[in-house]
Image 1 (cartoon, rainbow, N blue to C red):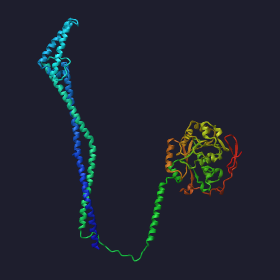
Image 2 (cartoon, one colour):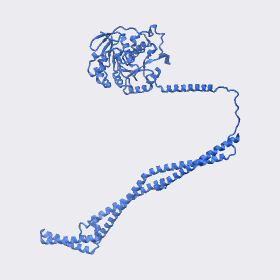
Image 3 (tube, rainbow, N blue to C red):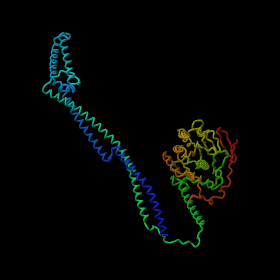
Image 4 (cartoon, rainbow, N blue to C red):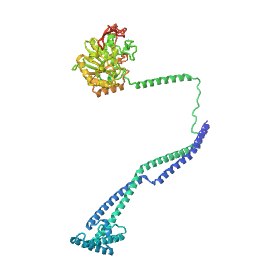
Length: 597
């Protein structure tokens, strides 16, 4: 057995060595190509050591800059001296250059002497005779001839040097020395300029080289990395080949049998049963993981305590879920896309939910002792939290307490108060704001002490209407006419009307429904209310399932209420009088959807 294991190990080592041997030539070729690429790159770009070259280029640029500065300084001194000599001699640089040659030529000196005499005679004659006198004409001709001769001699001697403006030049002694110095300085000036141009050209070449160095460094590093990788792979293969050959030459295997397995006398557990148990455990584990994951993903508000912790507003009321007390959560009206909320205080006046609305009304009434609340905005974070239901039932509660209340439906995008109270929608708030109707004609009386101003026709821009001065004036007028004005507004995260109306009202009530609002909605809503500095009165938690609440404080017990408090059948209401927009008095039975005169 041991021999078989050793033979197997040697066979495996030989196979590995054979594979490595086949790979080595390819890696040798890769190393050679990487070396050639790096060498060609350095030869093409004349690179030996980029770091040293960077330093040498910087030094060269610095030296050239210094030399250019020194040469320009010397040029300025030379030009200054040249100008000074020119002023002393009354010559410019070209005159001095011509003078340097002409002043040493005998023929030029003789001609200049005669020209000077002729000019002197002409000056004397002009003082004695008229301009057209023959003697003056004769002297002018002589001067012109001598000037012409001088120009010809100057051109021949100077070999192309331009004649001076005043060729009458004849100097001796110190003037000759100054002229020669001026000629020398002129030549030096030309030399300085040529030197500066050459130095600047050389500096530009070095600067261009500096700009190419980063790209050259990047390319060189890339080629060096490729070479290092190829060399590392090649070295690893050589090392591994050596190790494999040593292992293949070993005479004894590197594994041995410690103890032979003993077959069991009987099967303790059938494989299928074991698989079932493992599958069951795995399923339970996966289920727990899924539950935990779903719990982490669910950011919805689940309890009253979570809502209080997130918003940190005063808790004004808790409205239990209607499903806990009755199988009829809403009164469905045929032909309507949305179910119409139930008026609990009219249908079930002795239910725990009705008592919750009465408690909400009491909390609002005594919320601020220093300020009387007359105008209250009802809103929510998102749709579906029951703000319209809260607004309608709260208005009805206040009326039952003997107050005169106006309920305004300011949710012009999705109005519902006219359906809750079964009113006409021909004239409403939108028509009043645009001046198409008077408020007294648009407000409808639903029962004694309770009036409703429906939303009216949906305008193109509800926000602009509700944020207008007309709306502010209406709110002030309504506050004088009614004990309470309750405004049903759109959700905060859907439209911005609620924030604007919250500033016009005495306070804002925020409706939160567990399972609908989540922590993200709460954060955004708080930030929006904070930006406009709305006067938030507090929270109303709607649709609370008391059996899910951990605190017994929120549990509604049926023992306290009489048996009549249990919701079985709604109390049949008396026919109520409804005022239409054109003054016709209508009566309406809650069991009949068709109004009649």
